[in-house]
Length: 140
Image (cartoon, rainbow, N blue to C red; front, side, top):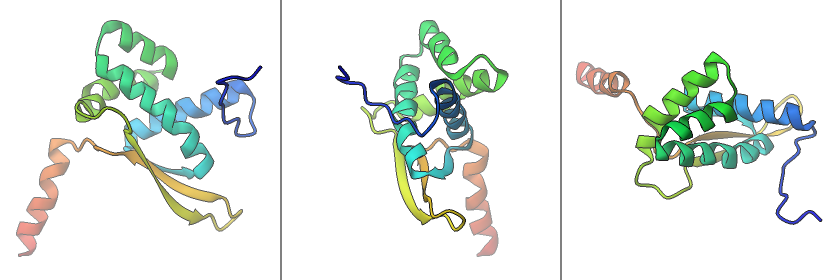
């Protein structure tokens, strides 16, 4: 029986699908917002939200589990570090729903529905936060 076996297959084998979701999650943590197809964004959301829930625990076991889920590459280790130090503290008071999907319309080449997926409470580094204020003061 298939009870509670809800998996979006994305027309890929299991290993390819797992690698795709790992890479999308790493890109989402690194860039804070990515543009992808709507189906991939919908498949990525529960994967990324489970990682944030894991990162909110902030224990050694949780860090090792996140690295094992993301893979053992240096990119995955950097991603796990950013997830625990930047993304999870930004969502500390939120109980769920860490990602937002915004539909963009269709891609011109093949008419695939496109979407942005981003963090709801996006972490903005301190250096980037001060630049718009300085630019507004300089233009006035």
